[in-house]
Image 1 (tube, rainbow, N blue to C red):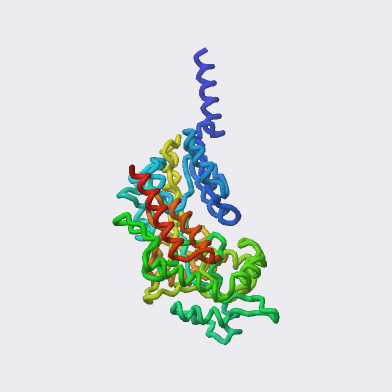
Image 2 (tube, rainbow, N blue to C red; image 1 turned 45 degrees about the horizontal axis):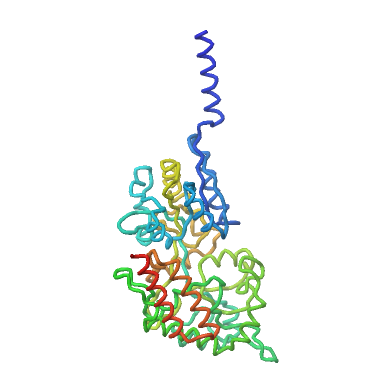
Length: 420
């Protein structure tokens, strides 16, 4: 009888091992879709095949990620891993909704291989709260063919804001009825464009991280939005609205920059992936957006993977993050920049067929001072208020002074309520 029991025990232990009955299943939630999802999923698949202990299920939630995560968090059932934007860290910490990862090195992550900018982006109040996933860089894009047609040097973008306005006028084309057929500089694209960027190119900021001061109605912010409103007045609101109605979706063959609808735009490095898909022969350039003081500045965004507070399998999640953090895996992602230091990137990184011309973005990054969305628990609300103000200013519904004064008052009031 004892011999039969031992045989049955060995049989079930074999099943346990062969069929992975004991594997811990963890979920990673993300907004990624398409080729970007596939790139991260390839890393997930490699991790799942590399060991017999853990299975990661990579779930694309899409644009409803925040709502679904908030609901799951409130129910005490968050995912084990969350793909977040860097600026989410401070609000998540304030909500006690994310765990620090100060011990991630003991799981095999080598933080020394990340750039200083990347490490700063995941550090808040002295603690590490995520592993950098991808690094986005933003600046001025231009269509070299349209520059050439307008008699401008296709290899020389505007260096000052005055020059940019001059180029925008020269590059704008009209039909016989006076309708815009090509816009020199598109300042309202992409549709989700970033309201915080403009003050930085006027020597200002929207928030002081050292003092916690809200700077929405600072002189620099007001000047930047006066300049932006001036663009609407220059080209005409009705003409712009009519022209913009002809734009196709960003991630499609109807991408307006890919189609030559406008000659210059402030956009992120991910535009190169759209152009690679839909307009591979387009001649384009990328450079820092001009600033009033001549300093070279670029806006940056960092995507990170965090572990929510309340995750059921923290140890397993940390093991996956350590695996993900290796340069050989992060280099697969499609963004032109990487959070990994250049010397640790694998050979062939700069010759990638999926993300061509990476060296252009690395050159710009090496020459510029980066700025990011501020680390503050109030940022989501502040960003929403700035977005409303920007739209009201651009569509000539109010003056920059009135709109930004209202933002200042609203955000300061919300901040006081949070601090009570």
